[in-house]
Length: 443
Image (cartoon, rainbow, N blue to C red; front, side, top):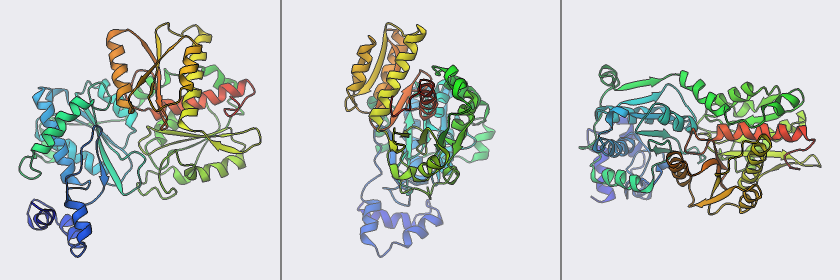
């Protein structure tokens, strides 16, 4: 069918709800908009779907989410892994809870158990949940740091990392072979619960997640030493980081954590920023103003699904400056390796992993400690693959992985970027250098 034929079909077929038809009727005289919405199906890449929210085959909506989930279900059924189930989390974006529920009920209709979080959670916790619950896959409804009109659908494998290319290709083939109307299965919430196929994940898992996060601390004694005078500001940019990060900083003993109240709301409109991306200094304007008024040492921000971290530090002249992903990553490499060496816990077979576009400064630091550096293709799924490989072979002890796009992954509990652990370590690192009379900028 042509894009116009597809548009007409969505306008008239009983499969589509009235709200969808009303939205499409409103653009009846806008041929360019109709073409953009229907000239193709929303592309499922190696990480999943991402697109503008709205009615149409080239948009994020209930129908495209169901179709993608049916492809994933087919992949799982072929592996006879239905009983292992799928963990599903979502962020603060528009329709994230609704899309998550649609995915869960499609999986349940295919006989696949779904573990759906009771409320929004960060991507790192989903990665942890997949492994902790023994799931065969995971789904996160998020568009990461994109503008508010977007949402997305990320798929994770049993190791908690994003699907590797070969597995993603199989899912894509299944999706492309399905008709969005006739081949997609779906059941009601009541039926899913009656059949024992839908389980709501409670807050009990949150504490287990934070227990594992806290094992990645390097120098808890440094926090205790400066707790009375050290100040930091945190902003979740209206996303999922607020609860876990405030909780872990409290656990660590930080006494002076200021939170940007205007940005501490779970709001998919992201009203205080042009884009909820911690790479953009503009998003830190409120935090920097607060920092100047409160003599703050470091500012930390996370994106809506809490897998990216940006920081702002004060230089010797009192000016607050943003650090790049490469700079922050290099600082974390130095901090982790030096801390482990001082404590005698730096493993001989340790390895630091970075992507090919990431600074070679990390290699120089690693080599100075006698630690191997490993380069992989751009994308955290490749770092996650290496982590899984090392866990099986024991050839290397993974220490940290990062790439220049404000993404860090420390420890072994997750296989994707972890803004919770990274925030914890950045805060601790800043406290540690304060015990030495230095700021992070000077470090």
